[in-house]
Length: 403
Image (cartoon, one colour):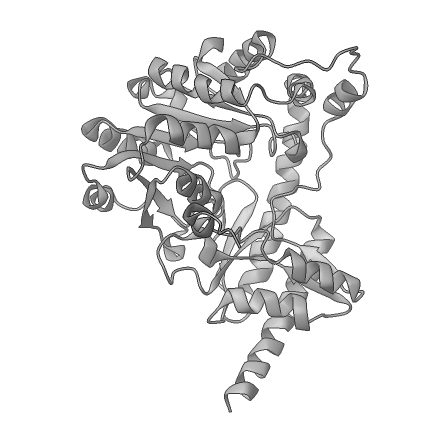
């Protein structure tokens, strides 16, 4: 039988989706599965988006330009001005989701065996994109005890080698919900300029910032003009994950011309998605105000209930809609699968994302899970009660097995 590639063997499975078969079987048994594993909001996609798709009148569904239509990118210029970034339409390349922006960005600035430094835990697919490009991820570990704050610059300095080409952050962070401060970004700016590196920032959650804090885009830092590469997407901002429409933004002309070649190779992003994205820019501010208010309520309830469970530690996230929780178990991969295979409480069980897959350092995150608070308050209450009882039942089962 022909064999698959070594790259295919190395490609990591998604910690977010790998338990789906067990959830499917649980549902077949009649168990209600409460999905806290994936960042799929239950918030309605704005009416302006849905109406634009519904009313899109065409006779031929044609290709877009590889970089996206100028009309849409000019509208994006106004959007980025609203978040403090002075960007030209020519400095934006439309992509099929933020994932493609990351992949094109990686391939454009890094060669095989080059290194990218990423604070961990990090969005698990960064590992996949790096594997696709034969790029080495060099992790710097942040701690749940500090709420996953940026590690010290000394730690970054220790990791930099002749192979280092870039640093990547997600701000606000997936999976931790941590919001990097302007002071932390200035520290990163200093090290990027000192070592002549690229700084990638995945800013897809920039609209979701809480407790009176503000988000700072690296696009608003003029000293980084030739170093900053921003990844963006409409998926989370407008609760339009299925549209798969994103963007790569940079002032570096060499990066832009190189990314465009990758974009041309895949022809264009979906026309329907751009129709949705262009309409999304007309979403009123009241939409985000209501959404943020809802997420704050969900976050506060989730973190409060989790920290009341014996042995659980969950820092308060400053943004996005994720929380990382430390559980009183040795292996959350096993526990999360057990919850789906063997446990239910009042006919329900909970699906979470085991956190080991969000780390590049072997052995870390084994007692942590990522939880997405993308469901309404009643579901969060039901889920945390189910988790509490599940932890108790799991502990008893493990004690029985070990005796």
